[in-house]
Image (tube, rainbow, N blue to C red):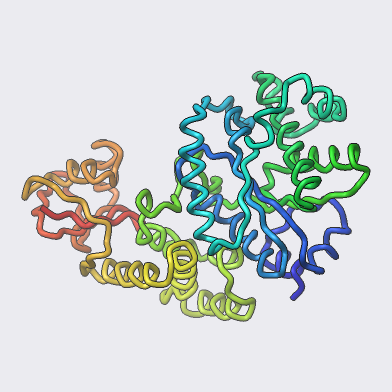
Length: 393
């Protein structure tokens, strides 16, 4: 398949700025960028879905640049739910370093990283208004979906200006580094087109953009930090085992989509796995392949093998040293207290509900008595399909 055919097959194309982009993608050797603001010390699986696409473009000969928004992160992009909390410059710098390390490792060092604070820090307010602001009509900005949705509840001038700053990023990278393409999630379409408009008006030349559909979980929520369901790329925050378990438990209806988005398996391999899902779903071969490939790409083959073996041990009621382990002080605990202590449940009332509904197992045996006493001896506690910990003294 050509590059564009591959992206289409995997469901990775939502918006395209121009039909000319199809040929550009298929020709290869185009500089492109993807950006994120450093709003946490780690990226998460929501980011990873875009980074996998960036790696896919690189495999077709395109040249990736990752922009980490040290400047835009100081403002925060507008959200439908309201304005973001302000993050200090010192905190952003710390977050920047963490993300930089993660992305460098993910691309095996074959990526250029830039920080928009480097070109924005000496740009005076008057110069920005004169050199950039005069090229974009306010009505044009008001028609941007994310801005328009905030007009009734109110939007600050800082948030309103965000699209101009990101648009200037594209212009800067176009002029200074020859970047022709910006790729991002579909929520960034308005910012991408602002950049294309600036490039067209100021240089008279054409740049391009495309967006990817946002990746949703089984409940229809965006996979991300703001939705409270983040799986962090930093393995100290989210273990490879937990990521493996998350994808191993992917619904049959979603596994084909996730295989296409998150893995580099070929069309033939994916179709073979889909046949297995239809004909022998109990084997969960597609889910196993998906989970293994994601962990392998994020953390290496050795960690993927460990996570696979630990998952198989948990599924069969066994114990693996690679399971997430929590040390406790006492030899006995009430099941509700233990669920809260291990963070498997946020509260005793939630823990009670989980137990009464049959969603809790101890050493692979279902527990339905809220007064059950757990004796601690490398004990495996499981809530639902995805949340498993080993508890030891």
